[in-house]
Amino acid sequence: MADWNEISEMLQKGKAKEVADLCRKALDEGSSAKEILNEGLMLGMGIVGERFKKNEVYVPEVLIAARAMNAGIEVLKPHMVGGPGDRKGKVVLGTVKGDLHDIGKNLVKIMMEGKGLEVIDLGADVATEKFVTVAKEEGAQIIACSALLTTTMTEMENVVKAVKEAGMRDSITIMVGGAPVTQNFCESIGADIYSADATSAAEAAVAACA
Ligand code: B1M
Image (cartoon, rainbow, N blue to C red; front, side, top):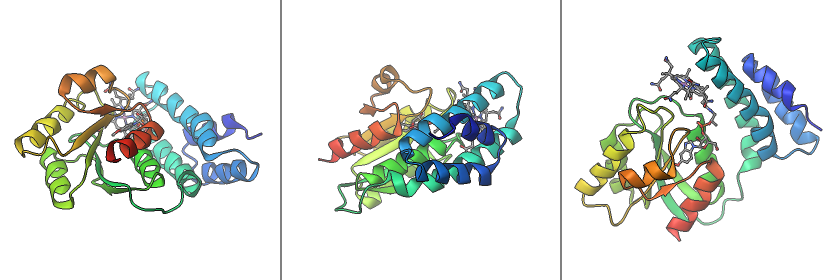
């Protein structure tokens, strides 16, 4: 069985090549991409987050850990997505204004594409109006917003307001997620769907497009 602690430790040290190699090895040994992500990569990133909170590590260390996490995700990506299939709907996805965290958002994209959805990824630090204009231009059914900071999750309410002001509220499903976001928060800002993780976000998006 794969050594989850080894993957976690390499991620914490920011050893991108080693993390990628260990993910490949774990796949070869029969672990699933989901297991490697949840037991190894997320374990490591969770520890980095705790140490960051206690000021035991700083932004540069967190950035290189994030780079190592991305290297692992790149290896897992082909094993997380399903076959091409017919496109089931269109999603405009991004991390809200002021927020640079994009790892979770990227996972949401991978899982949504794996379920046959077309995802227009606006990246991180996305202006409120951009979500709306791109959704309109592209005829998307869903706007999906990610936020990792308690200070930026409030931007999601501005997205809901902007969709209303554009007269698109009845034709667009607004999805929200990210570590500080909750079902209660989702309801309080008038968004439609809260999902706790990338897999449930993808499932909910498919259901909303059906
Ligand atoms: Co940041 N950071 N960070 N950071 N960072 C957190 C979020 C924090 C909790 C760390 C801590 O204090 N323990 C804290 C936030 C505190 C708060 O607001 N309550 C924090 C802080 C404070 C900051 C800065 C302000 C630090 C500073 O500069 N003083 C700064 C802000 C910069 C900015 O955004 N303007 C900052 C910067 C950074 C880095 C740039 C160094 C880096 C980001 C690199 C990158 O993303 N490219 C970083 C990182 C890596 C983290 C931690 C350590 C890890 C985040 C992560 O990628 N997790 C994080 C601590 C932690 O989370 N333990 C922390 C892995 C990822 C897979 O999980 O994103 O939660 P997550 O996604 C999950 C779910 O949330 C969900 O699905 C994913 C799993 O399946 N999900 C969705 C996400 N989006 C979704 C959307 C959906 C549905 C589900 O529907 C649309």
